Image (cartoon, rainbow, N blue to C red; front, side, top):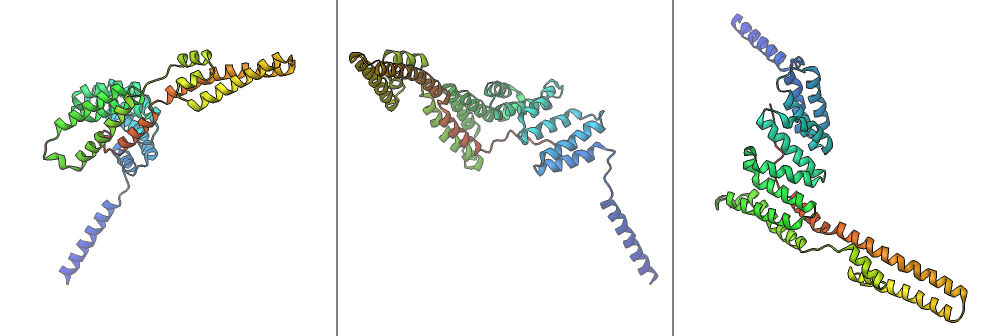
Amino acid sequence: MKLYFCLVSFLFATGLLSAKEKFAPPDFSKPQTFLSLADSFADEKDYYRAITEYKKVIHFFPTYEKLDWVHFQIGRMYYEGGRFTQAKFELLPLTDSKDTRLRFLAYNFIALSYFENAEYGNAQRLFRDLQRDPAGSEYTTDYSIYAGLALAGNKKFSEALREMQAAKKLWENKNTPETQKNAITKQYDNFFAQSIPLLEKASELSTKSPYWAVFFSILFPGGGHFFLREWDTGVVSLSLVGGAAFLAYDGFMRDSAVQSIIFTTFATGAYIGQIYSSYRTARKYNEELGDAEFRDLTRQFRSLNIALQFQTRF
Protein backbone atom coordinates (compact mmCIF):
# COMPACT_ATOMS: atom_id res chain seq x y z
CA MET A 1 0.00 0.00 0.00
CA LYS A 2 2.86 2.31 0.90
CA LEU A 3 4.60 1.46 -2.36
CA TYR A 4 1.39 2.21 -4.27
CA PHE A 5 1.04 5.58 -2.50
CA CYS A 6 4.65 6.49 -3.34
CA LEU A 7 4.15 5.56 -7.01
CA VAL A 8 0.98 7.69 -7.27
CA SER A 9 2.73 10.62 -5.58
CA PHE A 10 5.68 10.34 -8.00
CA LEU A 11 3.43 10.30 -11.05
CA PHE A 12 1.43 13.23 -9.72
CA ALA A 13 4.58 15.27 -9.05
CA THR A 14 5.96 14.42 -12.52
CA GLY A 15 2.68 15.51 -14.12
CA LEU A 16 2.75 18.80 -12.24
CA LEU A 17 6.32 19.49 -13.34
CA SER A 18 5.57 18.71 -17.01
CA ALA A 19 2.42 20.83 -16.89
CA LYS A 20 4.40 23.66 -15.35
CA GLU A 21 6.97 23.39 -18.12
CA LYS A 22 4.24 23.15 -20.74
CA PHE A 23 2.40 26.22 -19.52
CA ALA A 24 5.50 28.18 -18.51
CA PRO A 25 5.21 31.88 -19.47
CA PRO A 26 7.29 32.91 -22.51
CA ASP A 27 10.67 34.42 -21.78
CA PHE A 28 10.52 37.94 -23.25
CA SER A 29 14.10 38.60 -22.26
CA LYS A 30 15.21 36.72 -25.38
CA PRO A 31 14.75 37.87 -29.00
CA GLN A 32 13.85 34.31 -30.06
CA THR A 33 10.51 34.65 -28.25
CA PHE A 34 9.50 37.62 -30.42
CA LEU A 35 10.96 36.02 -33.55
CA SER A 36 9.00 32.81 -32.99
CA LEU A 37 5.79 34.79 -32.55
CA ALA A 38 6.54 36.87 -35.65
CA ASP A 39 7.24 33.75 -37.72
CA SER A 40 3.90 32.30 -36.58
CA PHE A 41 2.08 35.44 -37.74
CA ALA A 42 3.98 35.28 -41.05
CA ASP A 43 2.92 31.65 -41.58
CA GLU A 44 -0.68 32.72 -40.99
CA LYS A 45 -0.23 35.54 -43.58
CA ASP A 46 -0.84 38.13 -40.86
CA TYR A 47 2.05 40.18 -42.19
CA TYR A 48 1.54 43.43 -40.31
CA ARG A 49 1.36 41.78 -36.89
CA ALA A 50 4.52 39.90 -37.88
CA ILE A 51 6.19 43.22 -38.73
CA THR A 52 5.22 44.56 -35.29
CA GLU A 53 6.92 41.62 -33.57
CA TYR A 54 10.05 41.90 -35.73
CA LYS A 55 10.26 45.61 -34.92
CA LYS A 56 10.09 44.79 -31.20
CA VAL A 57 13.32 42.80 -31.62
CA ILE A 58 15.00 45.85 -33.19
CA HIS A 59 13.71 48.09 -30.40
CA PHE A 60 14.40 45.85 -27.39
CA PHE A 61 17.58 44.12 -28.63
CA PRO A 62 19.63 46.68 -30.60
CA THR A 63 22.80 44.61 -30.18
CA TYR A 64 21.27 41.35 -31.45
CA GLU A 65 23.83 39.73 -33.74
CA LYS A 66 21.28 38.90 -36.46
CA LEU A 67 19.60 42.29 -36.59
CA ASP A 68 20.16 42.59 -40.36
CA TRP A 69 18.14 39.42 -40.86
CA VAL A 70 15.33 40.91 -38.79
CA HIS A 71 15.32 43.93 -41.13
CA PHE A 72 15.20 41.51 -44.05
CA GLN A 73 12.17 39.75 -42.59
CA ILE A 74 10.42 43.09 -42.19
CA GLY A 75 11.15 43.91 -45.83
CA ARG A 76 9.86 40.52 -46.93
CA MET A 77 6.68 40.98 -44.89
CA TYR A 78 6.09 44.36 -46.55
CA TYR A 79 6.55 42.67 -49.93
CA GLU A 80 4.18 39.82 -49.09
CA GLY A 81 1.64 42.36 -47.81
CA GLY A 82 1.75 44.33 -51.07
CA ARG A 83 3.54 47.41 -49.71
CA PHE A 84 6.34 47.36 -52.25
CA THR A 85 7.73 50.87 -51.67
CA GLN A 86 8.20 50.15 -47.95
CA ALA A 87 9.78 46.79 -48.83
CA LYS A 88 12.40 48.49 -51.02
CA PHE A 89 13.10 51.10 -48.32
CA GLU A 90 13.71 48.36 -45.74
CA LEU A 91 15.80 46.13 -48.01
CA LEU A 92 18.06 48.64 -49.80
CA PRO A 93 20.53 49.07 -46.87
CA LEU A 94 21.02 45.29 -46.80
CA THR A 95 22.55 45.32 -50.30
CA ASP A 96 25.82 46.46 -48.63
CA SER A 97 25.84 43.51 -46.22
CA LYS A 98 28.95 41.33 -45.97
CA ASP A 99 26.68 38.29 -45.72
CA THR A 100 26.46 37.10 -49.34
CA ARG A 101 23.25 35.11 -48.75
CA LEU A 102 21.53 38.08 -47.14
CA ARG A 103 22.72 40.40 -49.91
CA PHE A 104 21.38 38.03 -52.58
CA LEU A 105 17.98 37.71 -50.89
CA ALA A 106 17.73 41.48 -50.43
CA TYR A 107 18.38 42.06 -54.15
CA ASN A 108 15.90 39.30 -54.98
CA PHE A 109 13.02 40.92 -53.09
CA ILE A 110 13.95 44.42 -54.26
CA ALA A 111 13.74 43.17 -57.86
CA LEU A 112 10.38 41.54 -57.16
CA SER A 113 9.15 44.75 -55.51
CA TYR A 114 10.21 46.79 -58.53
CA PHE A 115 8.35 44.37 -60.79
CA GLU A 116 5.14 44.38 -58.74
CA ASN A 117 5.31 48.18 -58.55
CA ALA A 118 5.47 48.34 -62.39
CA GLU A 119 9.01 49.79 -62.29
CA TYR A 120 9.96 47.47 -65.10
CA GLY A 121 13.25 49.07 -66.14
CA ASN A 122 14.78 48.71 -62.67
CA ALA A 123 13.28 45.24 -62.28
CA GLN A 124 14.72 43.98 -65.55
CA ARG A 125 18.19 45.33 -64.68
CA LEU A 126 18.20 43.59 -61.28
CA PHE A 127 16.87 40.30 -62.66
CA ARG A 128 19.77 40.28 -65.12
CA ASP A 129 22.22 40.85 -62.24
CA LEU A 130 20.60 38.05 -60.22
CA GLN A 131 20.95 35.69 -63.18
CA ARG A 132 24.71 36.23 -63.07
CA ASP A 133 24.94 35.89 -59.29
CA PRO A 134 26.26 32.42 -58.27
CA ALA A 135 23.56 32.25 -55.59
CA GLY A 136 20.90 32.68 -58.29
CA SER A 137 22.25 30.03 -60.67
CA GLU A 138 19.53 27.58 -59.61
CA TYR A 139 16.84 30.09 -60.55
CA THR A 140 18.17 31.39 -63.89
CA THR A 141 15.03 30.25 -65.72
CA ASP A 142 12.76 32.11 -63.30
CA TYR A 143 14.86 35.28 -63.45
CA SER A 144 14.87 35.07 -67.24
CA ILE A 145 11.05 34.79 -67.24
CA TYR A 146 10.78 37.81 -64.95
CA ALA A 147 13.22 39.78 -67.14
CA GLY A 148 11.11 38.94 -70.21
CA LEU A 149 7.94 40.07 -68.47
CA ALA A 150 9.63 43.31 -67.37
CA LEU A 151 10.66 44.01 -70.98
CA ALA A 152 7.08 43.33 -72.08
CA GLY A 153 5.85 45.72 -69.39
CA ASN A 154 8.03 48.40 -71.01
CA LYS A 155 6.53 47.46 -74.42
CA LYS A 156 9.84 46.06 -75.69
CA PHE A 157 8.09 43.03 -77.07
CA SER A 158 10.79 41.87 -79.51
CA GLU A 159 13.39 41.83 -76.71
CA ALA A 160 10.86 40.18 -74.40
CA LEU A 161 10.26 37.46 -76.98
CA ARG A 162 13.98 36.70 -77.24
CA GLU A 163 14.29 36.61 -73.45
CA MET A 164 11.32 34.25 -73.11
CA GLN A 165 12.68 31.95 -75.83
CA ALA A 166 16.01 31.89 -73.96
CA ALA A 167 14.14 31.03 -70.74
CA LYS A 168 12.41 28.17 -72.53
CA LYS A 169 15.77 26.77 -73.70
CA LEU A 170 17.17 27.05 -70.18
CA TRP A 171 14.15 25.16 -68.87
CA GLU A 172 14.42 22.42 -71.52
CA ASN A 173 18.15 21.98 -70.85
CA LYS A 174 17.54 21.78 -67.12
CA ASN A 175 14.94 18.99 -67.32
CA THR A 176 15.51 15.39 -68.32
CA PRO A 177 12.84 13.07 -69.80
CA GLU A 178 12.38 11.56 -66.33
CA THR A 179 11.42 14.91 -64.80
CA GLN A 180 9.10 16.01 -67.63
CA LYS A 181 6.15 14.22 -66.03
CA ASN A 182 6.49 16.43 -62.96
CA ALA A 183 3.51 18.74 -62.27
CA ILE A 184 5.78 21.80 -61.99
CA THR A 185 7.39 20.95 -65.33
CA LYS A 186 3.97 20.78 -66.97
CA GLN A 187 3.14 24.22 -65.54
CA TYR A 188 6.25 25.72 -67.12
CA ASP A 189 5.62 23.93 -70.42
CA ASN A 190 2.06 25.28 -70.53
CA PHE A 191 3.28 28.77 -69.65
CA PHE A 192 5.84 28.82 -72.47
CA ALA A 193 3.29 27.36 -74.90
CA GLN A 194 0.93 30.27 -74.11
CA SER A 195 3.35 33.15 -73.53
CA ILE A 196 5.62 32.85 -76.56
CA PRO A 197 2.76 33.11 -79.14
CA LEU A 198 1.43 36.13 -77.21
CA LEU A 199 4.82 37.82 -77.42
CA GLU A 200 5.16 36.92 -81.10
CA LYS A 201 1.81 38.62 -81.73
CA ALA A 202 2.77 41.65 -79.66
CA SER A 203 6.17 41.99 -81.37
CA GLU A 204 4.40 42.39 -84.73
CA LEU A 205 2.49 45.45 -83.50
CA SER A 206 3.78 48.81 -84.67
CA THR A 207 3.31 52.34 -83.39
CA LYS A 208 1.61 55.11 -85.33
CA SER A 209 3.31 58.47 -85.73
CA PRO A 210 1.19 61.32 -84.31
CA TYR A 211 2.99 63.73 -86.64
CA TRP A 212 2.02 61.81 -89.77
CA ALA A 213 -1.54 61.75 -88.44
CA VAL A 214 -1.44 65.55 -88.07
CA PHE A 215 0.08 65.94 -91.56
CA PHE A 216 -2.68 63.93 -93.24
CA SER A 217 -5.33 65.75 -91.18
CA ILE A 218 -4.00 69.10 -92.43
CA LEU A 219 -3.83 67.76 -95.97
CA PHE A 220 -7.52 66.88 -96.00
CA PRO A 221 -10.15 66.55 -93.25
CA GLY A 222 -10.30 63.04 -91.79
CA GLY A 223 -6.96 62.07 -93.36
CA GLY A 224 -5.29 61.52 -89.99
CA HIS A 225 -8.04 59.16 -88.88
CA PHE A 226 -7.84 57.29 -92.18
CA PHE A 227 -4.09 56.92 -91.53
CA LEU A 228 -4.94 55.44 -88.12
CA ARG A 229 -7.49 53.11 -89.76
CA GLU A 230 -10.38 54.76 -87.96
CA TRP A 231 -12.57 54.78 -91.02
CA ASP A 232 -15.84 55.82 -89.33
CA THR A 233 -14.27 58.80 -87.56
CA GLY A 234 -12.48 59.81 -90.75
CA VAL A 235 -15.73 59.78 -92.77
CA VAL A 236 -17.55 61.80 -90.06
CA SER A 237 -14.72 64.40 -89.93
CA LEU A 238 -14.64 64.70 -93.70
CA SER A 239 -18.43 65.05 -93.86
CA LEU A 240 -18.64 67.66 -91.09
CA VAL A 241 -15.82 69.88 -92.38
CA GLY A 242 -16.82 69.41 -96.01
CA GLY A 243 -20.52 70.04 -95.35
CA ALA A 244 -19.84 73.14 -93.23
CA ALA A 245 -17.40 74.49 -95.84
CA PHE A 246 -19.99 73.98 -98.60
CA LEU A 247 -22.70 75.80 -96.61
CA ALA A 248 -20.25 78.65 -95.82
CA TYR A 249 -19.42 78.93 -99.52
CA ASP A 250 -23.13 78.88 -100.35
CA GLY A 251 -23.66 81.75 -97.88
CA PHE A 252 -20.95 83.81 -99.56
CA MET A 253 -22.44 83.13 -102.99
CA ARG A 254 -25.90 84.25 -101.83
CA ASP A 255 -24.51 87.25 -99.89
CA SER A 256 -25.88 85.80 -96.63
CA ALA A 257 -23.48 87.17 -94.01
CA VAL A 258 -25.10 85.24 -91.16
CA GLN A 259 -24.94 81.88 -92.95
CA SER A 260 -21.40 82.41 -94.17
CA ILE A 261 -20.07 83.54 -90.76
CA ILE A 262 -21.80 80.71 -88.85
CA PHE A 263 -20.66 77.91 -91.14
CA THR A 264 -17.18 79.35 -91.70
CA THR A 265 -16.69 79.37 -87.90
CA PHE A 266 -18.09 75.85 -87.61
CA ALA A 267 -15.95 74.52 -90.48
CA THR A 268 -12.80 76.11 -89.03
CA GLY A 269 -13.50 74.68 -85.55
CA ALA A 270 -14.26 71.22 -86.95
CA TYR A 271 -11.11 71.31 -89.10
CA ILE A 272 -8.85 72.24 -86.14
CA GLY A 273 -10.69 69.76 -83.91
CA GLN A 274 -10.12 66.81 -86.23
CA ILE A 275 -6.40 67.67 -86.43
CA TYR A 276 -6.11 67.64 -82.65
CA SER A 277 -8.27 64.51 -82.42
CA SER A 278 -6.03 62.57 -84.79
CA TYR A 279 -2.95 63.58 -82.77
CA ARG A 280 -4.53 62.50 -79.48
CA THR A 281 -5.83 59.26 -80.99
CA ALA A 282 -2.36 58.37 -82.30
CA ARG A 283 -0.81 59.06 -78.88
CA LYS A 284 -3.46 56.97 -77.12
CA TYR A 285 -3.00 54.14 -79.64
CA ASN A 286 0.75 54.05 -78.92
CA GLU A 287 0.23 54.19 -75.14
CA GLU A 288 -2.22 51.27 -75.21
CA LEU A 289 -0.30 49.26 -77.81
CA GLY A 290 0.21 45.71 -76.57
CA ASP A 291 -1.72 46.25 -73.33
CA ALA A 292 -4.17 43.44 -74.09
CA GLU A 293 -1.33 41.03 -74.89
CA PHE A 294 0.55 42.05 -71.72
CA ARG A 295 -2.57 41.46 -69.60
CA ASP A 296 -2.95 37.98 -71.11
CA LEU A 297 0.74 37.33 -70.55
CA THR A 298 0.48 38.40 -66.91
CA ARG A 299 -2.59 36.20 -66.44
CA GLN A 300 -0.62 33.20 -67.71
CA PHE A 301 2.31 34.11 -65.48
CA ARG A 302 0.20 34.34 -62.31
CA SER A 303 -0.85 30.70 -62.78
CA LEU A 304 2.81 29.64 -62.74
CA ASN A 305 4.15 28.36 -59.41
CA ILE A 306 7.41 30.28 -59.52
CA ALA A 307 9.75 29.80 -56.54
CA LEU A 308 11.44 33.13 -55.85
CA GLN A 309 9.52 34.08 -52.68
CA PHE A 310 12.13 32.44 -50.46
CA GLN A 311 11.16 31.50 -46.92
CA THR A 312 13.70 32.36 -44.24
CA ARG A 313 14.05 31.27 -40.64
CA PHE A 314 16.90 31.92 -38.22
